[in-house]
Image (spheres, rainbow, N blue to C red):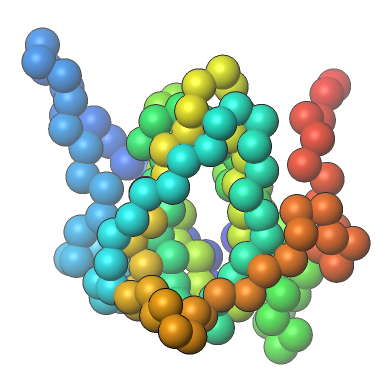
Amino acid sequence: MKLIQGVATRQLSRIVDERGYLAELLRSDWDLFEQFGQLYLTTARPGVIKAWHMHRKQTDYFVCIQGMVKLVLCDTRQDSPTHRMVNEFFMGEENLLLVKIPPQVMHGFKAIGTSMAVMLNCPTEVYKYEAPDEYRLPYDTPEIPYDWAVKMG
């Protein structure tokens, strides 16, 4: 899949033994790392869509650590060579993946499967309660060419 300009992914691996596993999710010596702002988690019940939003300054680093999600990105940058391109990632327990989302790329996710999805985000900026760097659109906005329904076939 061709990626939106500035988007990067890294397949994550598990070090497994009889006790369980360890997985490194983000390291400062990886080439896709920029800087640390904060770490937070967000959850979604099965079938819930949390979309759309973007940031003007902040880069996001998403990893789904429980359940499964369909993470969708749409390039809304007018001057980007990948303007209006959509990327779709299926990530979580079955596919441990880190996705770097640059500023001004709209994104959202849908919890897929039968269990609660838990997403971790390690953005490059701290959340400013008095002046959030966050811009939202409804999940079903006609401004983004994406249908959240399951694609059968």
